Structures are given as C-alpha cells and as structure tokens.
Figure 1 (tube, rainbow, N blue to C red):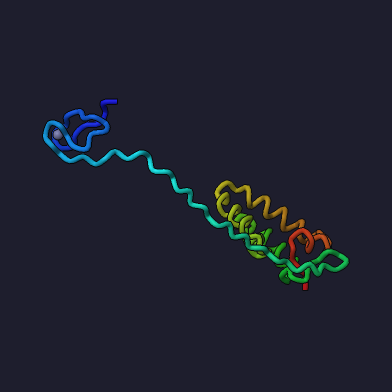
Figure 2: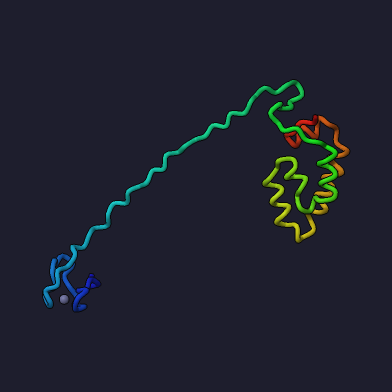
Length: 134
Ligand SMILES: [Zn+2]
C-alpha cells in the first residue's frame, strides 16, 4: 500500500501521515471514500386521464376526426415517408417510416396500408387507428 506519494517531492509516504517526512509538505488527509449520496429522484407519475366514455362500438369520442380516403391516398402516394402515419397521429410510426425510407420497404408497406385503409370498413378503420370518421 505504498501507492501514496508526496505531491511535492514524490517520496512514498505513510498512508496516515499528515505531512511529508522528507520535505515537510502538508498533506491532505486521505479521505475515506465518501458515502455515495443516493439522489432519490422523486417519481412523478403523471396519470393520463383518458376519457372512458366509449360508446357501444368502442369508438372513443376523444379520438381525432380523420378521413379514411385521405389516409388511404397518403399511404399509397406518400407511404414511404410515413405521411399517412403522421396524418393518423401515429408520429412514432411515421418517424420509423421516414428513417427506413431509403430501404424502399416503407413505400411498399405504406402502399399496402393505403389500400387496406380504403378497403377496410369504417368501424375497423376507426378502432384500429384510434380516429373517428366525420
Ligand atoms: Zn515531500
């Protein structure tokens, strides 16, 4: 345990010494590892209150009004950019489409989704995408 040396002269010093016995340099008392103060982050839980006024068909009146035709057309023509996802409020998915635009895969998926939107019945479209049709 001779790894403590004097900062002034470099001489090895006793771990408990308060000054160097060679040059007399005052030494900072080696501190025992300070107890780690655990920063307890207060957990703020934000309760998302979603209106539960679901009607018989399960369509939530809080869902935004969208057009199935618009979503379908956007998917078919701009699906590779995820525009139909952004339009439907699915921003995370939209970004995913954007990120993988270069692969060409989102274009195919978006195209198919566009067709599916147009062919799906209104209720399924609304329930699947959490939107309401006007
Ligand atoms: Zn010294």
